[in-house]
Length: 355
Image (cartoon, rainbow, N blue to C red):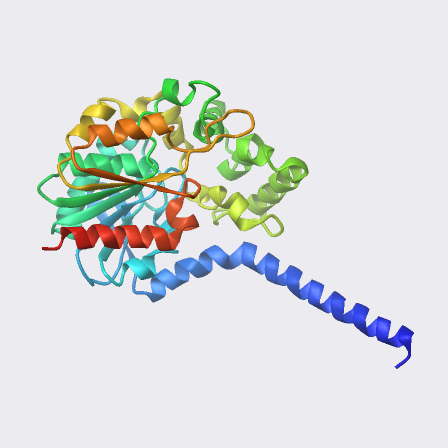
């Protein structure tokens, strides 16, 4: 072949490969999460609902392959947030992964958006739907709820796993200390502004314009905001994703179509923790606790990116009678970012409870 013809073939081949790579990248952004969720269903998880004091708690139950395990997601998520680890956890546990009030298909009612109301409902849920001793694990605000369940239901909770819970860095004055915390700027403030503005805009689109995280994207910020706005307009009442911005960058907005911002506003005002003293709550836990702490990190502006400072983490371990802390080199969402390490930790907790 002549050199010009060879060059033409090479250029065409490169173009085909590049086009394929772009399509693969786009497809991953749009569908990777739903494929994880489908794998959970394929592993035997069935979504269902329980009525607790007239309020719906939506949850997914896995096959009965061992001791019961309740999973409680963090703010802005829902039971599917655990999809990456559910198939492996189902091999050794009978998993119940719940939607908290204000999230997913569970009840959306501002009167339920307190630690006490949600925690007591989860205890009743466990009594009726699980009906056996269980391990409880919670992530972020769900970790606070897991601690509440463990403290208030000692006869049934055999072990507790706290996945990067924001103890001592959750109330308004706590998260604003120093340069402030990521959750204040990216979680509490947008929710508060949405509620006070009485906005009818899809929350994900409203959040995108005010997100602290997206401001860190530099030149991609405006593109991210526009993609999310356009997606919400074209796909109302669907999980939120983007075609050309990496899914993991915008995953925090994925479940916002099912999230009530009034829940986030309860953290802004501090009302979510009404009637609960953090230190006392932790001191009431009598079962063994595994505390998974994401590595402490700060932004260039001094904002705390982690759920806790090292000092706060020390207060957590001191307050709990039987507590092992494991620091994991991960971001806040350990079970998503480091699924193998999370599953290993849960399984180790199970083994420690066996005679």
